[in-house]
Each structure stands twice: as structure tokens, then as C-alpha cells.
Amino acid sequence: MHSGSTTDKRFDPARAERLLSLERYARLQPDAFLRNLGIREGHRVADLGCGPGFWALPLAEIVGPNGRVVALDASPRMFELMLRQNPPAWLDMLEEELPATGLDADWADWVWMAFVWHEVEPASEMAREASRILRSGGQAAILEWRPDASGESGPPLQHRVAAEAVIRELARAGFRDAELRWQDPDQYLVVARKP
Ligand SMILES: C[S@@+](CC[C@H](N)C(=O)[O-])C[C@H]1O[C@@H](n2cnc3c(N)ncnc32)[C@H](O)[C@@H]1O
Image (cartoon, rainbow, N blue to C red; front, side):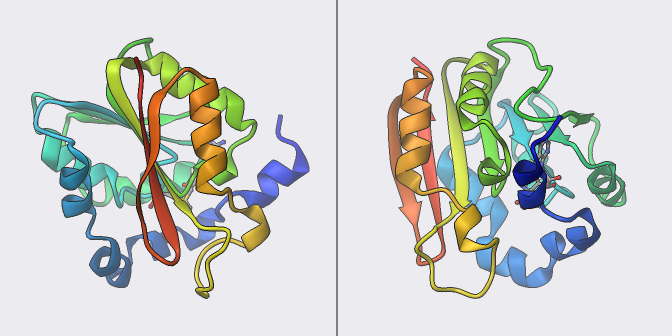
């Protein structure tokens, strides 16, 4: 069960198409972004809160048939849109309610969470689950909206989580070297490694 506040923060599936806008591809350039992060051919990636596949399809392209992408979301609407884009066989779609994932322990080389951390509660459980499913040496990458942003787009400022809070939660869950890897005026990326 969700508390009202958690559900209020959730992205409205009726707006899912917006997550695949050309403007968004041009701005975030997902393929280059993910390659710069260090995701490579053969890696196993859990894309948690995947939405309609803005990141999951480029992830599948990068990891190739020797890798695996599990694209997890609670909304079936997101998978309808993903299926229209002909995902390859090594991209699995998983309907699940975070912070649970149902994935095996030590499975992933990467946990990728784009603009979903602030929608999931409690964050402590999300951090522990990310750690559980990562192999030793695997990394979690959290892309989020800045609470101090001045831009028009994105969720309400009061729903956002500061990078420092994400870093603190990951460190509490046992991650090492949790750091702010990148930021622009609106968004930031935190990366941390499982020891
Ligand atoms: C803002 S969208 C981002 C989607 C995608 N990561 C992207 O950047 O295009 C947030 C996504 O997280 C999903 N989500 C939110 N809370 C969730 C939960 N508790 N369990 C599973 N998925 C959740 C929503 O359904 C939505 O698809």
C-alpha cells in the first residue's frame, strides 16, 4: 500500500508520451549519457522506474545480446509504449512496485534510476534494495531533479530530493564513494559503488 503522499508524487501515466519527446532526446542524449557513465557491452542493467523506454532502449543497444536490461515499472501503460518500439529479446519488462524489485541478489552491474528516486518511499528501502541486487563492485546511478532549480519543467520543487540526501541514503545502505558526478541548473547525477 502507498501513503497518499507517495502516490501524489508519481508521474501520471497519461503523460507518458512526453517522456519520448524529440526535445527530451536532444537535451539528454541518452545513448551518449549512458556510455559516458561507463555502461558497456555485456553489462546487466536494472532500469528501475523505466517509464516508456527513453533509457531502457539505448541501454539495450549498448549492452547488446551478451548483456541484459531489466526495465521495471509499476505502470502497464509504460510497457505498452515500450513494446511499440520493438525492444530486443535481451530487454525484459518487469511490472513491480518499488522499492521491491523481485530481482536476484548480486545480479546487476548497474542500477539505473532516472527521475524516479523522488517518487519512491521509503528511500532507505530503495537504497538497500539497490545494494542487494548489485554485484560487488556494481554501481548505482541516480539521475534527479534539483530542488533549487529555477526551470519551468519537472516535478513540483517540494517533491524533489537534494543530491546530498541521495548520497546520505546510499552511504547508509553501505555504498562507497557516493558522489555528485554531474549537474546542470535543473538536474544532477549521483553515482555510488557497492563494496
Ligand atoms: C518521471 S517517470 C521517469 C521514467 C524514466 N525513468 C525516464 O526518465 O524516462 C517515473 C517513472 O517511475 C515509475 N514509478 C514511480 N513510482 C514507482 C514505484 N513505486 N514502483 C515502480 N515504478 C514507479 C512511474 O510509473 C514512471 O514510469
